[in-house]
Length: 243
Image 1 (cartoon, rainbow, N blue to C red):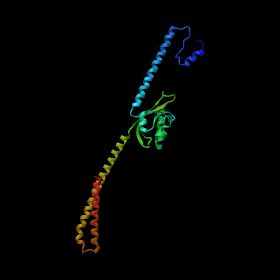
Image 2 (cartoon, rainbow, N blue to C red):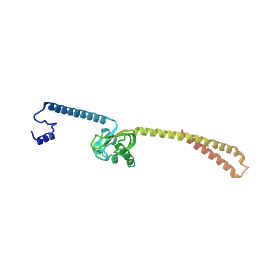
Image 3 (cartoon, one colour):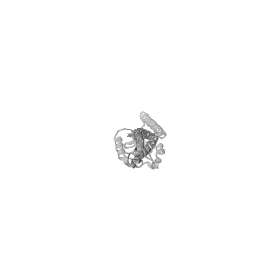
Image 4 (cartoon, rainbow, N blue to C red):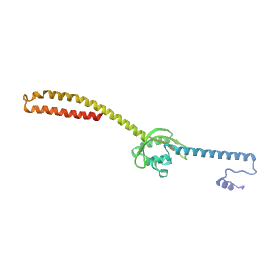
């Protein structure tokens, strides 16, 4: 076909290039070489994308791609396992509305904006809402991708540290309890010493009270002795509990 409309139609239908008559052998060779190069690059790109997709799907961490309007563009299989949402349930929806507690959204949105402006995010800890209403704790790394779509997007990789965080919290709680127990034991020991002295002194003067002081003085001394005994029992039980 010698007309321009034929060229346009052919290219629209998938032709790689066109030649003008009479055919120039050098031009034909160059055109075929360019086509071969483009096909090779396309094949390499597909291989790279497939390898990347296989790596992402096999990764044991949450990998998401979020657009500037905060909607989800990609959601890997581990994300489905972790959150309880299928990819089809979240693609195109607001990531913040689905996965972030309301009181954390503004703080995370500021970080989101900084990354889209070109900054990198390292080891950013943030809670994540699951579909069943429970929360996980994730450690995020994120960066901007400029060539994923026509506009920059955010690639975020989140490692689930919920179990580790719970273990750290339990260890910290145990340390605090141990410190409280040591303080309580020391305090109880300091209390038991004066109680023992009070009880001993009351028992010592008890025989001399009867007959020398008013009738109710002996009762008061016996009350002092009995109450010091009771406090000593309380202190002993408290020490046992602290241990």
